[in-house]
Structures are given as C-alpha cells and as structure tokens.
Image 1 (cartoon, rainbow, N blue to C red):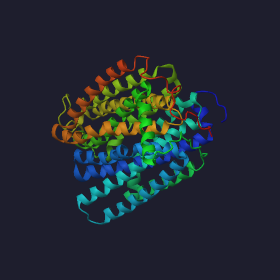
Image 2 (spheres, rainbow, N blue to C red; image 1 turned 90 degrees about the horizontal axis):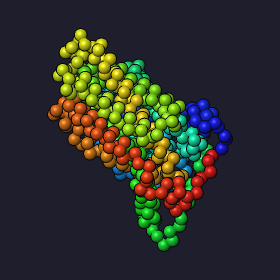
Image 3 (tube, helix red, strand yellow; image 1 turned 180 degrees about the vertical axis):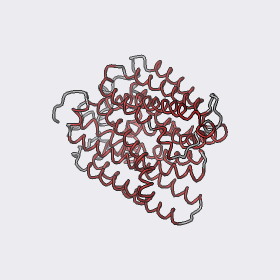
Image 4 (spheres, rainbow, N blue to C red; image 1 turned 60 degrees about the horizontal axis):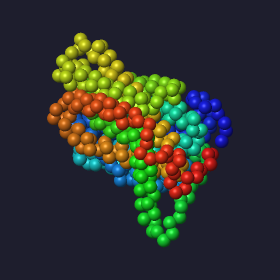
Length: 458
C-alpha cells in the first residue's frame, strides 16, 4: 500500500481505491435515503398515524436481527468486494421494482392495506440486502487506509453519509418528485445504484481468510462456532462492548426519529411532511460540521469524552424540540398555524435544536465506529460489525413497538421529552462506565481468534 501522511482528509482522498468506495457510498446512500423517505412520506399522508410508521420501521429493522449473524459470517469468509457488488446489483433490482410498483399504485386504485403490504415487503427486502452491504463496507475501510487514518476516513464517511441524506431528502424527495414524478424519481435512484456498482468494481479484490480447521464438525456446527466466536470477541473486550452500545443507541434514536419526525412536522408544526425537510435541514449541517471537526481535531480528545458529550447533547436537543412542540412549553397547537406572529422565532429555535441534534449524532457515531474497527482484526471484523447491527436493531425494535401508539395517545412532544430525559441519564452512565481504563479482557490486538493473520492490504 502507498504511504500517506497520517491524519487529514487529503491523505485518504489521494487513495484512489478509498475514493471509489467513498463515491459509491454517496450514490448508494443518496438513492437509499431518497427512496425510503418517499415511502415514509406516502404512509404518513395516507394513514396519518405514527403507529403505521412504527410498523414500517420494524419491517426495516427485522432483517438485522434475523440476518446479521449470517451476514457477518459471510463477510469474514467471502471477498468483501464481491459482497458489495452483489448488494448493489440487488439494489438495482429492488429499485426498479419499486419504481414499477409506484407507477401501478399511482394509476390503479388499490386499497390502503394492499399499498401498505407492498411497501412493507420492499422495505424488508431493501433492509435485508443492507445487512450484507453495511458490514462489508465497514470492514473494507480498514483494508484500504492506514490505521492512523481510520478516524479521518470514518469522519469522511460520516460527512458524506450526511450529505447523501440531504441529497436524498431534498433532491429525490421532494424536488425530483415535483420535476419527474414519483416513478421518475425512483428510476433516478435506480440509476444511482448502477453507478455505485460500477465504482465498487474498481476496488481491488481482497483475500479471504481461512480459519482453523474443525475436522469432523458439520458445516452447521462450524458456522455456529464462528458466529459465537464473533459475539464472544465483541462482548469480552470492554472498549468494543461500550462502543457497540453507543452505536446501538444511535441506531435506536434514528429509528425513533424516523417514526416521530413526519408526525412532528404535520401534527405539531402544521407543515406538510415533505416541506419539513426545509426546517430540519440544519441537522445535516450539524453532522457535517461536527464530522469535519472530529476528522481534524478528534484525535486530541479521548473518545469516551467525545461520545459522552454527544449523548448529552442529543438529550438536550430532543428536550428542546419537545419544548418547542408543546412538551412542557406554552404551545399546544400546531405552531405555524396557531401562532403566526412567532413563525420566525419558532423556526429559528427548531432549526437550532436540529443543528444540535446533528452535531450530537456525529459525536456519538464517529468515535464509537472507529473504536470497533481499530480494536477488531481482519479475521473477525465482519462478525463484530454484524453484532453491531444486530444489537442496534434489537435495542431499537422494543421501543419502536410502543412509541408510535404512545405518540398517538399522549402526543409527540411529550414522548420526545421522556426520551430526552432518558438520554441525558444515559450520558452520565456512559461517562462513568467508560471512564476506567481497565478492560474485561486483554486487548483485542493481543488476543485474537483462531487465525490472527491479517489479510494483505490492497
């Protein structure tokens, strides 16, 4: 591998293989976010129920619980490049199918139940593909960059993940929908998947690693042994375990915001669901600014401190959004309709809290993701990342089962305020838990699973 100066975005962007993966991520995630957001908006407009949004979020989360262990095993045993190629190719198929179904739904009078079933199936299939794509992508980054460039590399991926969310929300939905229609916008997303597949093809093929043989053991028992090995490695290394719980919190909060955000826009602010992106866009800006700062200066601050600041900031941001929406403040009706004289100040306050939300999300995610990649080795990294996705969705799916109904009964602001109080308590617990330098087991760099050899970096 070529030698680059440590730290900084310039060094990782000069790596053409990392550049190809990075550009593929932008295109693929832009298409994914735009398509998913469009489906969520359609459900909100048709049903006006947070409970239905909970159902679609559960459909998105279930594959992680059902398939993540298998996906981690596959990622550690099959070329990651081939997994990325296959995942993007399948996304082309599901994207085209979604575009075709959108055309049928818009021209035919189907029942609400039939529409929801179609959406749930497509969300489930898209998420199932992602269970193989995400750990393969995460496990590929350390193979393409030096270890001292992992923090800026992950920071850059977080920046572009945020940028892809903005592009997906603002260009594919609603602007592309207004210009091209729903079906045209979805065909545009499919074209992005095609371009991402071509870029992934430019990445060099990584070598698969062999594990110690288990003579006389069936393939099923061998697979179970390797899955157990990944979980054991993750939970017996304190730094990895803490980071996994932090990432699980990020995942759970993301799912809860997906459930509550459309209803917050329509039922609390009095906006249309798609126009809410113009009020909450500072969240993307916050993630962008925080990601840049972490990539440039994050190595100077202990990562437990960064993540604790992020969790505490998230609690404050959610409390502020709850107050602005009526969860303890003077507002009990849609603000933009009931108090037109407060539109400017109310908009400014909501945008400020959205900005803080984005910054907190980056502070929670980037350090934790870097710890997981640094403290696990090439032999087991895919399975550790699979544990991350399984744990994140398992932690999030329980509150998602109830949060939609609670929001419909007690109101979105009050539910948001309760979540904020809980998050602030977790920030204190996280700082206390991660403050001790001692670990439950020796460093993952010194205690490796059966085959500790590292694959050559392409």
